[in-house]
Length: 270
Image (cartoon, rainbow, N blue to C red; front, side, top):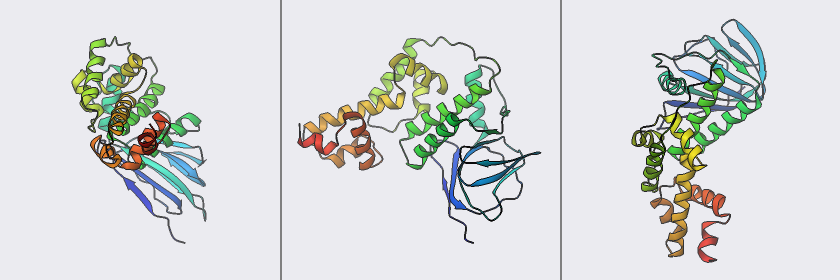
């Protein structure tokens, strides 16, 4: 019986590694690793062991594994399964935990749950994995990761995080920085540094003040500029490159999602 190929993706903007495999019969001994990991079952049934806990998991299951925790996850005997697993450096999560709680954490705070059947968590993980696999813009990858893990951390909080009053000027600085760099692949980290806000509160306050996320705002501005260039007769491929899109199909997809027609149709049917 041949194992399916396992894919490894490491987005350059984040200390992450995404592994995914379809119809796999590969088995792993009990092990641990320094990274935090979270993953989902796409198909099949697996036996999941987390320390002294053992259970069967299947499609819709999300597993949560703290760093250095002994675990294993293997398909049932003579069967195959499909899965996605995301490995995250604990220091990155520790910084996010500090940002949300307002408490300076010197080390990663372990999650209490190690398994979930929550449909929302499962779908949110799938959405994040899809963005990483499709090699979306660095801003969207980072924004999506921060949003996903912030939600996960907030669910673990026994008390509500402290209420921060964000000065509108700080959020406006973020808005202005994005406006000034719409043709560049900027990151949440760069915007946060410019505005003086933490990664979590940057996304939260930006959406609250402007009604959309930093990435959505940047994409809207990119498309508005693309429309102007198309009206001038500029080449579609050149526009995609000049505005920092990953490729022409990436430009095409986002243009159509906002304008409801393709760049080509917009250019020749004004």
